Amino acid sequence: MYIACRDVIILRGYLDIKERRKQTIMNNIDDLVEIYECPLCGGAGILEEDCGSSYYVTCLECGCHSVNIDFKSDDDRLDAAKRTADLWNCGKVISMSPGE
Image (cartoon, rainbow, N blue to C red; front, side):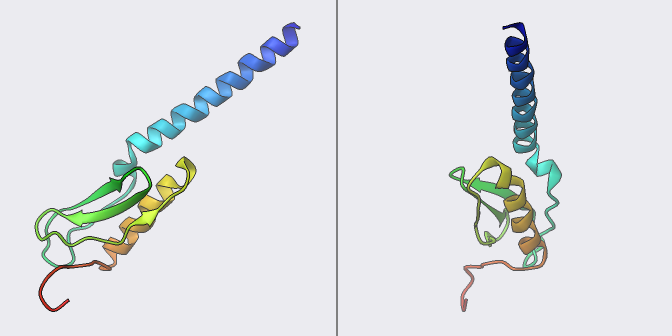
């Protein structure tokens, strides 16, 4: 009986550590992803989360934005943020300027 309880405590401790690691990644995702200036106007770009299921980058000056990259689980969250930032940093943006 003691061994079973000890195993449960060890497992719970492992799960708590894993959950804390996920929370740290989710809270500090902006620190883990580098966002360049807007490729159109040079304004500041910001990474935003849309309804807890996707990420996109938008310019605070002109309003252009990247596509939304969806994620299905917390494990995919960081990957989606990095992919979104890579598209933005490469200049793949959507603009609402006339003629587009």
